[in-house]
Length: 231
Image 1 (cartoon, rainbow, N blue to C red):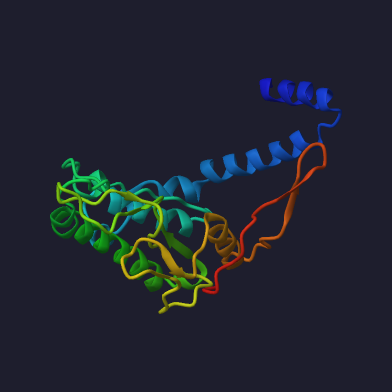
Image 2 (cartoon, one colour):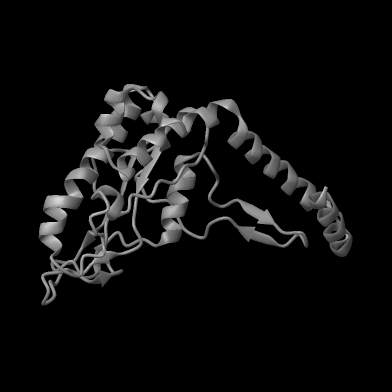
């Protein structure tokens, strides 16, 4: 095949085709997972009980979380679901980037449907006995300014924002970290994206200090952070 020819050619250039053989192995594993019957059927939401579909909400965001549960149930080890605001609000033009009218948008359109979908996911996983073995992480890339702008909105603010962990390996019912009184900077428990990575690895039983080696046998840490004391 063309892929085999490319692997052989690249292997000759670096003097060792072992890395490409390993890559082929993982590529085939991914293909088998995607094309296998359980995963293929998981994508067909028409096979789901209508009551469960309704529980998540009749919008792309909610049905995406339902699909995530079905994929995990079918054996997919890692699933990412994106709940964009337009998907939650029925494509009505709202988005999480609330530079205008922040509070009415959040209260009336965005948070109610998001809360319903997220609650449905956690409840569904628990009903099926899957929550204790499934790590669920809700996160975003930045927060919003504590100060409201002249348009009744809140602008980008990477200094302080929140995320949530639930399920497998997580000690629930706690809050980690705190901001200053104005919500501008961390006052306690500041952490980096690398610390989040390390926390996820620990919850999944993966050594966050593990190394990977490239084709020249140079070592690379899979993570440079430290796990948070929540798992």
